[in-house]
Image (cartoon, rainbow, N blue to C red):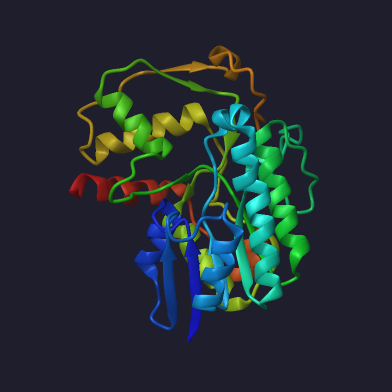
Length: 291
């Protein structure tokens, strides 16, 4: 039986890995208190105690704006810690699965990015994540990096995804604005969890883009969330959404405006279609309406 250690054990993706955990895998889910990636001695100790064959690292610092001001902390979590973890895993013959981000691209291409396209991070968060994924890939040819984007899904205690934010704002009667010039791919957390375990079974390594089908702007994504929430009876009516450009928010941080990634490589590897985020959204909202 393959033993799998999951870091970030209290988070969204870990929750969905837990939900689908097959019986022929032995899972250990460790939160920050039990597996602090900023403490290499503790990390090494836990790996020696549990002796996993695979580590799935779901931990990350993904508060993008705060990464600009909390540079040392974000770099430590997103770049240094994955490097140290990858090297410790390599020394013990452990395979590491790590998650990257669409933000490593600068948006200049305007057509879906493949794994062979060159990265060009525009901000500190993206630079840290890119350094982390490159360190993981350098540490061992057995390691796997899955780049993903706009991950969403239900969680029993955490309501931090964009879908939750939109629903909360709509219920509170706030004015809704969303950008028309920021485009990426929403990715349903249960799908990402399932693909991860399929790739673990296949022994896949290297760099793979792991996203659902179809790019969408933040503006259209918000409107679809609201319309589907009405269908799921989570909202009485869909409030208006004002279309704006990213410049409206007057952020000093540079963000890429187009980071749609192609999932052709993953589709070929798994031998089946990955499915639309639209069906994932319907499932999530149906679950939310029952809670």
